[in-house]
Length: 292
Image (cartoon, rainbow, N blue to C red; front, top):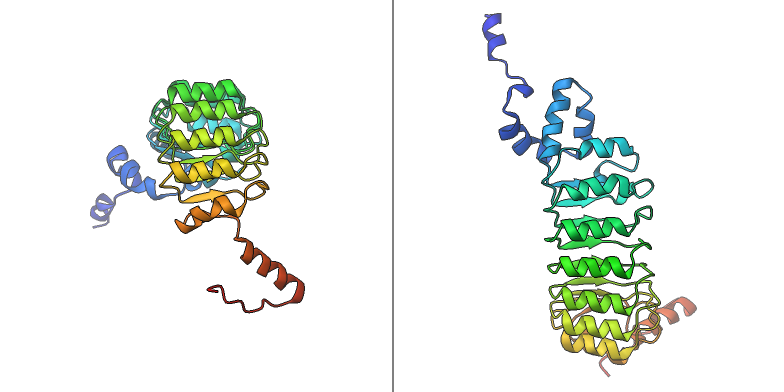
């Protein structure tokens, strides 16, 4: 009887690895837990390596910032089918040495997030543009190594780009943004925030070329003025969100038409700002009939 029960037992590792465990079970487990599971036995180590080799998404925010670079290289060593890659949590140590092999063997990447990775160089961005020609989403915020040449390479090879975050990429000037907008006509989301080099020239070029634009972040672009905002209103009928905080030369005269289209703007209307200021000063907001 005991022998019969023993024969009926089914262990996890007895299930088909690729057809059942990898496809229907491990995909629901956090990456952090899978990495820990590797330590259980040699069989589990081999099983997790099979899963990692077939993983479509690799996001280090699921593991935490303490992942050693050796573990990063080992985890992605055999993967050639990645579609989404985020190395944001590796910003303290990731360099071209670790990233270039991963980019080179994953030519189907659709989304890459390198935000804050200040130890990378333009070589990583050029590698992304040359290897990942189907790229749709790219995060480069606070990567001050991004320059005009690497952006031109990206524009030349990744024409299907839908969104790009260039916040605080301060080497970039109007010329680079204009070139990008002429090549990436399907752009829906663009951030060039915190860059004093950006002027009306590039904002107007983006508006005229990227008619599908839905989100535009110009926060802290001190040289942007009303003229370019009016152009955005004219040429971007699908715009949903506009950020112009700290754009001191952008006034309500250019924002009001967008408000009437229910575009979300991060700057409150003048009257609302005045009421908030008055409430801060006197401790309450007086009733004002806004319909007058």
